Amino acid sequence: MGTEIEKIPPAQIEKRSFEIITEELKERGIVLQDRQAPIIKRCIHTSADFDYAGNLVFSEKAVEKALLALRRGACIVTDTQMAYSGINKKRLAEHGGEVFCFMADDDVAERAQQRGTTRAVVSMEKACSLRKELIFAIGNAPTALIRLCELIKEGKVSPKLIIGVPVGFVNVVQSKEMVLSLDDVPYIVAQGRKGGSNIAACICNALIYQL
Image 1: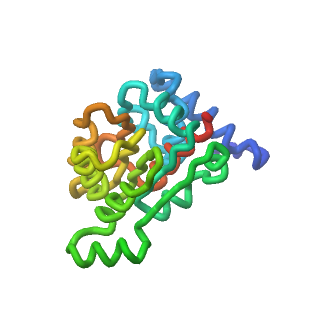
Image 2 (image 1 turned 135 degrees about the vertical axis):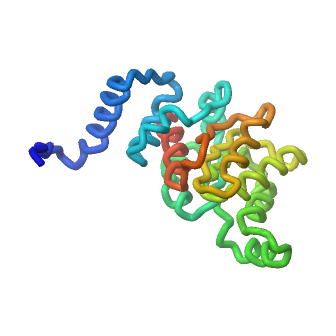
């Protein structure tokens, strides 16, 4: 194809990737806000999709508020084991935080079956019992995001940040719009159908790496 292969030491591959992303954003005339740039660039790095430069929506001072909470030891709740696995738990633990995912818990599966609902719904309810400052990272289940919004309105939980990036076609856009309609809850939302557990995890990591 005539394309020259770059010879890059393994330790420099990520650095070079971010340099390419920065160059291409500049070529596209896209200017990112300083606080948002590391998050948007990491989403592009994870997905190779430059649409994230336009579809990620941040509430006012969402990044600053999230970083403050993480420095105080805030914990992260995810809706998938994939997102759980992808978050840098060692770096988070340096500030006293943990990552939780209740989707595979036996009690969650049992209650979901009894009630005829999803484990994602019950896992959000279980998270409310945590006596910690919480950041929710939802990358797969719109039902989790919908139930989380309901729990907020019921006064049962007050997240320090919602990362709302479920992917798919059924109730995905609607669940994200529910988050955007919330008052006084910081959020980072990927508008439209795009997202995923990998995007949820990379947003968490982009925040953690700024601590």
